[in-house]
Image (cartoon, rainbow, N blue to C red; front, side, top):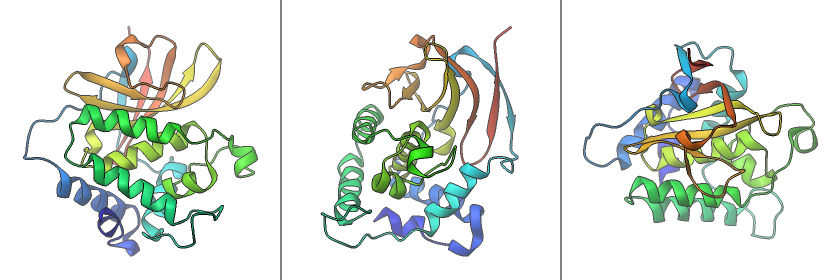
Length: 226
């Protein structure tokens, strides 16, 4: 199971997270091929930095993810993360392994979007908290928690980190911050959004203004074109 790969090297911190996720991707990736990478999200320019130091919510979540137990105990009636949560997640990964990327994106987006939206002050008692998938399945979550769970599920399926970013943005229609997952495909960058049931091509979205995006290796500051 993929969790065995994820849980190697616990004592090595975020470097172990990166190596473990890369190992999982390699283990289930198809034969070597040129893969697209995310860039120019929503038509904005971007500046890359490899310093993830300021993003402690993201890096802290990755640390917790690596340290979590791979198996869940308790019966399916438990209100905490339980055997059913774990089995459903692993069953999704097993069922999607080897399928084409389009099918994986649609299923993962739909699976995660079934969870209930709860804002962090109510859920965690703090203004902003980035949850691991296990925490998300236990307590539900808000927009970045959906995006994180989708990201890490797709990583387990072999999608490379270069193909994906968590995008923190401003929703211009609602006037609020938001977060989505961007995934580069051969047909363009696709957006997995807890506010939209379908996977959507980023090129047709006009009401999102990206602020920054991030993956395991780097982050990007976004600026309006021109």
